[in-house]
Length: 153
Image: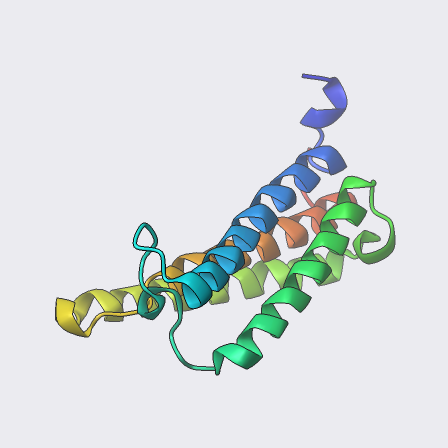
């Protein structure tokens, strides 16, 4: 591995992780669209993809906006900290803490989900993909902190 990838602020490493998390989120959105339109038997039913907290007609455009913004952030981190990814250590610290709170909320939601009788359980896929979004925030926040010189080397 090239020596520059061992640095905590290596944009290629952070960019690669952001791209993987973005790809997972894109797969979730595409899978949900496929289930909503075609109802294939090889994918879980819509009740497992969608919690119903927001009408699906409103949720899909929000998810598409997330994908665009996440793609821009990923590109900018991978590019070495330009645009959206200009190093902002204070923002990074906030994003890291928000990612912990977000992930903690999803763990609590999962515990509540597990405590329900199996016939009342629904929407487990959003829990997993909210953890993916929390991980995206954590990696992005970690990038800002590392690129701004906050982490130890």
